[in-house]
View 1: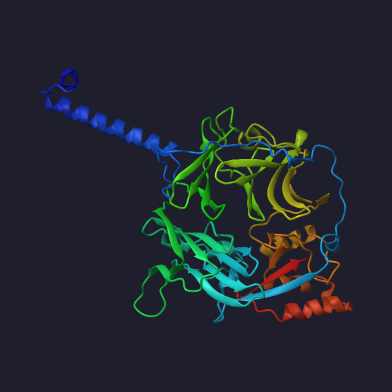
View 2 (view 1 turned 120 degrees about the horizontal axis):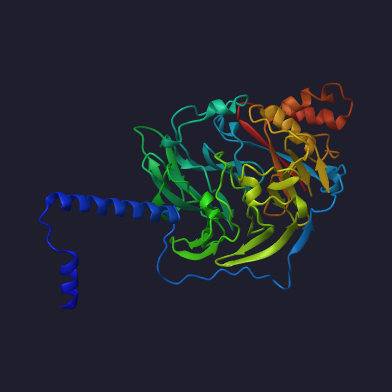
Amino acid sequence: MLLIVISCHHNRLKTNEKELAKEIKNQESEIKEAERIASENHVSDTLVKTHGGFFYKEDRSVDLKHPPVVIDFSKEIPVRKFKLSNIASKVRYLVLQVPDDSNYFSEVGVLNITLNNIITSNIFGIQRFSRDGKFIETICKNSFSGKNEIKFDNPLGSFFPIETFRGAIHGVNTISNKVFYKYSNYPEEKASLVRFSLKDNSQSLTLAQPVEAGQPETFAKGEIISEGTESLSIPQPELIPVSDYCYASIIPKLKTLERNSLLMITFNLKGDTLCKFKQYDFLDVPITKTLNLGIPHLKWYYGQSSTFKWAFNDTIFRLIPPNRLVPAFIFNFGKYKTTDEDWFQLNIKMHEKLIPNEILEDARYLYIIYDYFPIEKNAKSKLEYAI
Amino acid sequence: MLFDDEQKNKLLDPLESMRNHWKAGFENDMDGGTPFWPRYITSDRNIAMTLQPELLKHFIQHSDYMSTNDPRKKAFATFVNSLKTGGRELVIMFAE
């Protein structure tokens, strides 16, 4: 009874239609504004479901048996000429070719080299080769309108309208004899995560767009493991397969440098969120730069371990899914450290700062390329290579 | 250890960009080929990089390959001249 009384009190009959219309309009505006704020704060990824159930708590503790290795950049770094024989005992070449005189390799794209296969991916799709270079099959064929060729001497003249794109362009990775990729259908604003087994030779075509005759203009092979929406207007997170059962989603937006924001989410193959990792590096002052600077997060695989160096954070973590980030290395940059404030604030000069932009790791070395900003006036940054 | 090189990224000139990249890689003292900087790790923990035939043909024309008597460089030039351009082939260089 009490509830009814209160309800009636807040919803008493309006006799003035104009007043009623105004109130409805205000309420609609408030709802729209609330939805806008909610969508900004929400991870813009429909492939990840934020259920209300159990989450793992993030754990960044040190592995006491394997404490992180500290690499010191703060003192003068010795410079010397290295030769290939210092790091290798044999050089071998392999020539890849897609049948039918295809121009597939006019864009190099990305390679994944497994024990038995070489998987190549670029804007034209995903191809599978044996380790001795023999073409096996097309795993995913992309389609888009415009030129289907990249001019080597004018790559900028080869851009195509992304809104016409259907296929795999991001997130192609191999984990234990499986290829994981994201198939994007921009015209229909759909996205699917697909898993392709390198052991099973009978996988059927999915997501095929039929044409009147001949081969479909686009297709994907493998099993669809999750479906969601694709959007050009909202920046999409980077999706990284990190194990047989788990993906990591790297939050792309500048908002990740605000307090209480997220750095990364792990989720299972059903799309259920497993763990949310918080961002602990954030800007003290709102950004003044209008220039859209990227956030130089770095990631690579060491064996099957996904390894991350987030921008402005000097610790390098290996992810043990779903919730452990184990510190593996610590970079001590000393006075050369680039903070988020240095990177994004216009009034701060980058003199004598360095920032890594590529890292690769094998059993013996880290191969690091970084930008160094000299102290001399008007001097441009230069790339330096270190092992 | 550090490789220090005055290279600049030239987005509109991939050849220039690649030449600079070559200058910065490990000097190839093994087979007379191009310098090497790893871009990929294989699952058996070897390192590799990709090379486009256009860049390789450009590389041998703009160095001492045309006049060399070094048999390793001659063999490398023969290999490069056999490659198809126009996106039809891609070379992977493994350092093992």
